Amino acid sequence: MLLDTIFAPFVKERPICVMARAVLERLLDAQRIDDLFARTAQQQYTRELLFSSLVQLMSEVVLGIHPNVHAAYQANREAIGVSTTALYNKLDRVETGVSAALVRDSAELAEPVIKALGASHPRWVAGYQIKVLDGNHLSATEHRLKDLRGTWAAPLPGQALVVLDQQRMLITDVILNEDGHAQERSMIPEVLDLVEADQLWIEDRNFCTLGLLFGMHRRGATFVVRQHAQLQGELLGRAQRTGTTRSGPVYEQLMRVRDPTSGETMLMRRMTVKLKVPTRDGDTELHVLSNVPSGRATAAQLVRVYGKRWSIETAFFEITTTLTCEINTLGYPKAALFAFCLALLAYNAVSLIKAALRREHGRKKINEEVSGYYLSLEIGRTYDGMMIAIPAPHWQFFRELSDRDFADALRELAASVKLSRYQKHPRGPKKKPPERTPYENGKHVSTAKLLAMR
Image (cartoon, rainbow, N blue to C red; front, side):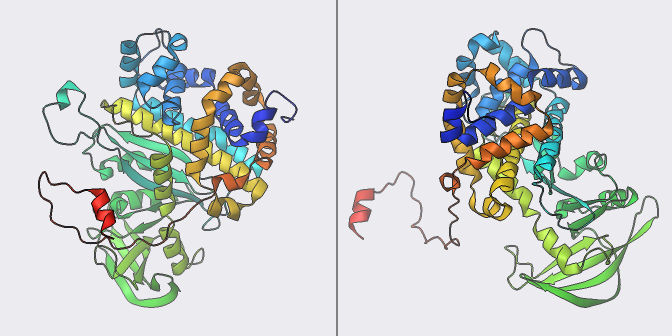
């Protein structure tokens, strides 16, 4: 379909960029975004600058097409049509509910296309919809705001709890907090609003609280979570060895916990891994709690599933290293969280591209050999020139295709991709750094002299 059209030169040489633009055309549909803003905004309103225009401009910063907000404004001044002051005022007031809704909307648009591609990952535990939950503190910003200039302390613009759908590898939900010092546990009530029956939630020990675990259990959901030292229960019977993992043998026993508020009790499985190698904190044992019935998954399987929670850490790593998700000049919390959410949206776009590549080239090859960094690098490098060569109106038909037809178009484009351009180069194990000479204020060395002394 596409190879005989105006897209042909780019389809031949840069199919990844055509895929990226096609996906973004679908996820960043201006009318849909403006409608979403109208539905979700509580206080902010549109006067001169459309919310879709702000999203489009900031997405170009996040994708690395422009180095910062002002450079993106300079390149789009005529299309934006407002002053820089008006732009920043709009940016600084984007409500967190609107930012979170953008992420949810992108996942809702991408999911049916991934299903049409037949590119979903196998479930880690059969019969459950797997959700991975983790928190992310935004990095410190510059001290540009007047209120920040009198402190040496690092200003934190906020934090987020992010939910990853394991089968589609999509960020389906995000919970935002403008207070960079807020505890992740203070956001747990909002997590419970997302929990549904037949889901399996994987969480780190920060989320191991009676409120969250009982809340999930009451909703018919299950969990796999590392036991926090503050959560204690009554151990029943003796621990029995039930299997082994690469980290060590696995033991299991029942544990009863009680909700002090309601008096309700719950039996859960407590799995202990006797670690071959201690953790960096010196722990020799790792305790994992779950209410998944023993007939649905073995203890060793659930321990391995808990270990796979690093998939969301990998997602954070990709978002941080390949996308400009944390713009250190955006001091206002709402603006910083908005940029972070656009990076989550861009991650969903890349996940959709990877799904098409998996369908065409095989899941193992894409998962193990293709680098998200090089994918994003090419998009940022080629995107602007492609948009000059192929004006925006030519891309609109991607927005109008059915999910099935769009999936077929992505497959056709994926078939033209030369995977060798995006090869991963995994590094070996880290070596212990050599000892350094003591620091002396003002002292420096000549690199050339040090090299000559080899």
